[in-house]
Image 1 (cartoon, rainbow, N blue to C red):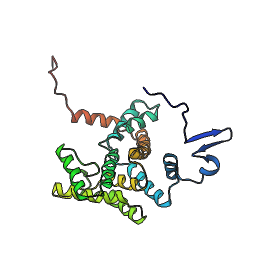
Image 2: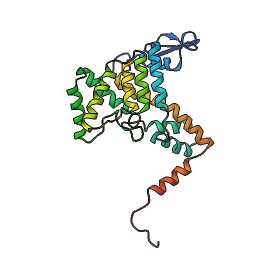
Image 3: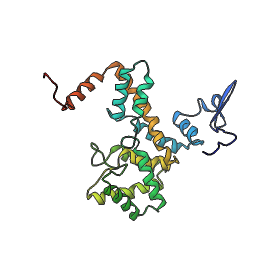
Image 4: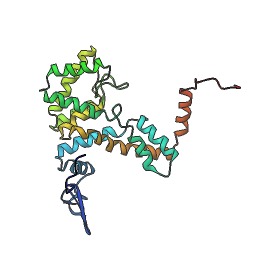
Length: 259
């Protein structure tokens, strides 16, 4: 086991008796009232203040990711919160644990593929290879396909349109288009770019590192889950969800004696 450096440091935050300093800026004098929440997210995470165009696109991505109905993350949050109403954070935490490689967090998987394509000059050959690899393992290409939004995901169309309007669309958005053509060729039909695919391209072109793309999904979904828990308090759905699960997944184990 390697020894730790003699001095551990942080470049994010420090404080004095009369102020807090984040990335060298006074929270009270330079940030509160001067930066929006979206701008503050980028500033805190990436150590730079975003341009107006970047702010608009990051904000649009956060809005897009915030809500998508009774998905696994929302169901998990509602069920856990109904069992522990004294701790709202437990419900939110349960929902965030469902932001993974199959739902919401697919932004990260899509981002890695786009980065690979960008490094290869966005070549059609590399895109075909990526699709072939996924077909060989019978796994979907992250960022493509949707059970409801067909022929195209309207969220993706809007985000990519906005990225072009703001001059944000760059190499990752271009790579997404190349990969989309490869996906369609292999499927011999049109497969939509879903919201997580568009968001991966847009955030990457905004300068967000691929390895923390999922973090932006988590930030957005946390806000959405708070809304679900507020509704659960006002209009409880947990019992209906529980009963629906019982009806949908009946017991088929060993016979019960006496019945």
